Length: 218
Ligand SMILES: Cc1cc2nc3c(=O)[nH]c(=O)nc-3n(C[C@H](O)[C@H](O)[C@H](O)COP(=O)(O)O)c2cc1C
Image 1 (spheres, rainbow, N blue to C red):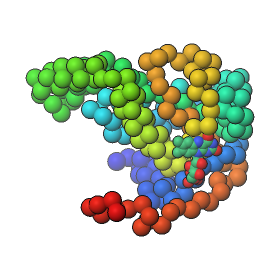
Image 2 (tube, rainbow, N blue to C red):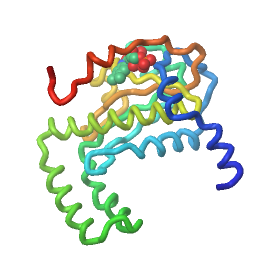
Image 3 (cartoon, rainbow, N blue to C red):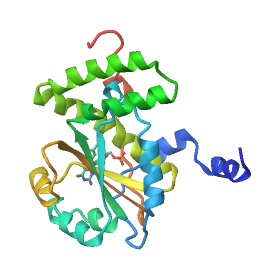
Image 4 (cartoon, rainbow, N blue to C red):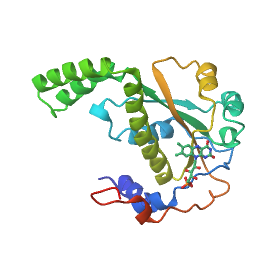
């Protein structure tokens, strides 16, 4: 490990701190810009999330141009964070992600993680199954994987000193139309990202006994 990597590691907050400090932030410093490089790094780390058959169906539309954030504002019911945050990331699910199965499993072969013949049969099976799923099932899968990537993205962002808020409060149909999203992509959620000017308000959680059941749901 080089010296700079060492320092970088020391600067990273502990994982538990990141989890505890993440809070939905709705007031951002509009002067903060996240470089393409840093945004790409955040998204790259987020994509280490697990996904169904490792098909990685997440796609990200990063909206950081101010005129596009203005366009999104009324679609997101005038939630001010849309224009104040450095960017709004639309997390989309690709219902045709199986088309990348060959690339994904090919990479695994190249990396020496999987024998070529195993990959070949995996690809055949995966493409066969995912391409014939009922539309509702395919959407359900990308929503599940989309939720996992979204959470991971928000935690990575926090670990790098950024704040986020996940947003389901927007008109999906209008968003699809305004941003030219084809039927191949299902919007999962919007995530505003930037630097807080005011901390998110504290929230509480249900007592753990209300949500955990051991062995039977009673
Ligand atoms: C799927 C989803 C959609 C949400 N939509 C919005 C939204 O449109 N606007 C907003 O201000 N917060 C939104 N939130 C944030 C929640 O209100 C917030 O996560 C919750 O109150 C708990 O607070 P915390 O995130 O600070 O822990 C959303 C959260 C989730 C998970």
